[in-house]
Image (cartoon, rainbow over all chains, first blue to last red; front, side):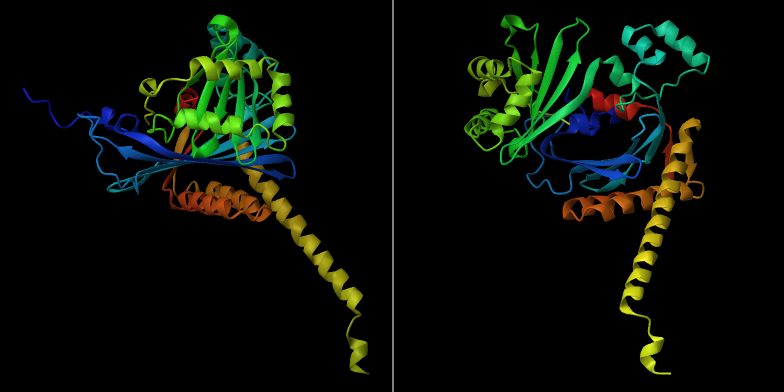
Length: 278
Length: 111
């Protein structure tokens, strides 16, 4: 029997309906009198595929297939009080443009050592529920770095650090502690208007485990990962590169060793490169 | 009386202009501070969705904050983005205040 051509609505959303072919992220901070206003935008263009036959692309002309997300965040300098975040989303598809209902989230900012964060980090759900019932905490509470309870629960140790290298790209470092108490770092390389994520975990076999993963954008070309890597390596003598690398090394002492090992051992072959989907 | 006597000296004019400009700046800063304070005061609001009439003040405040950001930097790309955000806010018919954290959880999943 022939499979139906239509799929349930839940399956035909953008997550399954296309591949990202380009992604632009812009983040600007504006220092106001008593706080910082951050405007970040994310623009994703994608190519639709036939859902029944994913190998078939529905046209090469991708103009108009685009997601636009913008966040406007205000965070006070005093690190206490309240912050707000406005989120606006717009989606352009082949037959029109749709905007979601804008969201405004106003959250209380509490010191990072507050009881609510301690309970979340320790995974003490019953105590957290009791605290919420008593009105002594809210699910929208944020710590003084702007992390929500959800982010705190993932055990991100501190805010991401961004190192930019002129003409090469940028490297973004996240530190987080996994449930197994292993320290992990995540690197995101934004060079070549693409994004390559390298994740390394110190508990990884041979302690060298920098595993390139999740190439999130225009990487339909399977050699793209290797091209990015080569470009990154070719610019290591550029001005300022070594000092920034030294800063990274201070955070992650075996960074250079790990990158070498990643080059030799863990870059995926062209056939194993996963396809990024929305 | 000669005409030249009626015209205040140039220094006085400059000083007066400077005072007026600084006064305007103080007023602008106060207005910006007022907008931010009003938005921050929504922290204790329950989760709700408001319609176009009720959200007018909130959208105006957000627009003013965005305009202040636009004045700070003359970055063409970003001004374009700020205009787009402003346009989307102006055209919105509803606004969700302190809604669920679905968006954030999705962000973390794609992290």
